[in-house]
Length: 288
Image (cartoon, rainbow, N blue to C red; front, side):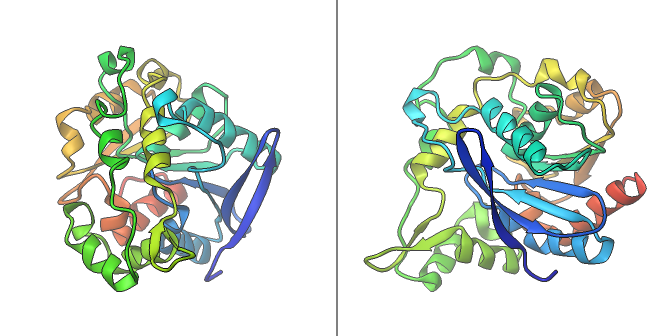
């Protein structure tokens, strides 16, 4: 289908929104990066759905729980539990899991901690921080990403101003045009007094970043029980602190793929390349 249906699933103590692309094939769960929205998967999700009849489900992880960045934030293990409960509630069995950044860690935690069965996992730039970091207690201001996100610009007078601003920033400079337009359309919301603000507010984004400090994923990697592909951006700044080739070696059945010239936000910069890699791995079990 050309556009997904926005749906809501009831969990025991909250509700979770997701985009749904109905299909006759196996389900693919696509988990977005910290502070972003599931609509950014749309060009890839649409093609996987139309060309391969895969059912696509892309949940929105930002504001379905009240969390405080100064009180530990939104724990990623809780997101992983919410994902497990969502998949169970929807009666989906053995899906493919695709996660980017935070979403990649949530996928791996849901699979290993909550025993969410998966056909395959594709982990794009997972935030597997160095071991010692998980033993630290720091404030929002001390966290290199939460401290920046909580001070993010959060108002633009219109979409044109938002576009010009985003294109001027290194983080968004190399984004695919369609995905940047989707971010402005769905990652920002009109304000009652005019203008646009972020759908996932700076404070909620900071809470998500803080929540990644509480559960060390490294001891769990050897427990991953499905074929796994780890994707890294060739120009990602995370290479300085995150060793994804080491992570690949720790997973029993895993492969590593480097996307040349890409930064941390690989799917936003190279959606067509990601689509080919995803389809090759999911459909044929091959590394593109």
